[in-house]
Amino acid sequence: MTRVLGIGECMIEMAPAGDGNYAMGIAGDTFNTCWYLRQVGDLALSVGYLSAVGEDDVSARMEAFMREAGIDPILARRADRTVGLYLISLNEGERSFSYWRANSAARTLADDLEALPELEPGDLAYFSGITLAILPPEGRLRLHAALARARSEGVRVVFDPNIRPALWETAETLRSEITKAAAAADVVLPSFSDEAAAFGDATPEAVATRYRAAGAELVVVKNGDDTVVVRGTDVALEIAPEPVAEVVDTTAAGDAFNAGFLAALLRGSDLSAACRAGCHLARQVIGQRGALVAVDEMDLGEAAGR
Ligand code: ADP
Image (cartoon, rainbow, N blue to C red):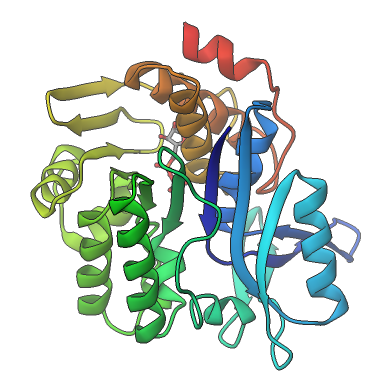
């Protein structure tokens, strides 16, 4: 059975419930992708999530949430920390986010990481620019080393740059760390608007060319409702997402795309079918409010086969 190991930070989400109260949820970029990988209904896939939590009740609740979603938690426990939290504010329909994550347990996830656990050749290790941004410099080095060792043993490394400038020390560190990670990945899944802002790329093709030149095998550039651009050795594809009737909430669109894309690839779809599956899953997610929403598990196969 193929295994996907997500690596990163999962947080508590407080979202306005509309009555002055807040509803508590659990989400985080790499975690969202793992969650959607389980939702698309491929029982031949095992999904793990590597992170760190505290020893308090809310950490236990997060762990239970992962198990209930069919994800194996692989969590270091830190007695002196707890999980990070974000709160969504709604102002005339516009969402803004406030974060309490500067001291979160997840920042220590690589503190004693020697090797990525429970991965065999052909399995996937999945991480993001947010995973790297939250780690201290020595944690980044440990994670890079563990990923490189796993890759040399046949694990495929998948990286979403998911650029969040506010999480990085400097713009220069952001660019050098993201480039280093992409260079050591088999698949890079950037979003054009983030890349254009951080690296000055004029087009999605320029994003792909830059990461290919750095050493990435395959680059899939997402671009909102615009064409997905795919570049690799002997690969040049453009896939147009189908329009959405109503964009309700784009939170986790990119994370869901990644899940649909990877799930289809793992089922043996070709790259264009995998992109269509990614677009199809993302489309369902942006039509509903929230990061983790119900999606139709049968739809993925139909989308990929179209
Ligand atoms: P992110 O959420 O990471 O910023 P994007 O905004 O590029 O990523 O969107 C990721 C994917 O979600 C796109 O490749 C596309 O498949 C889908 N998507 C996003 N916005 C729309 C939209 N308005 N209409 C249709 N699909 C969309």
